[in-house]
Amino acid sequence: MAVLQTANNIDDVPKVKPDRCHALTGNRKGQFAVDLKHPYRLVFAPNHEPVPQKDDAGIDLSKVTAVLIINVEDYHQ
Image 1 (cartoon, one colour):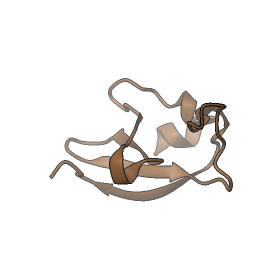
Image 2 (image 1 turned 180 degrees about the vertical axis):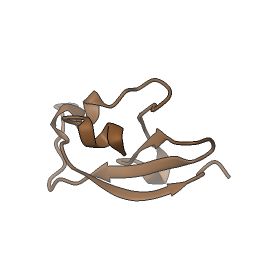
Image 3 (image 1 turned 30 degrees about the vertical axis):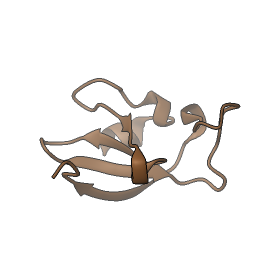
């Protein structure tokens, strides 16, 4: 939580361990996760309407400044 609180935007959240912010895929497209204590992840999504997008229709992480925490889970089960 501290990493998310201190970041200016999602792009500022480290992409390498220990936090490892990463985009989810499949039915979780548009959601992201950061690693917690293995095997748990904090799952969240941009809290913007509309979600900021790049020209290629991907999410512009540098403009996502608010997130909605969805849950903490081990989604690999």
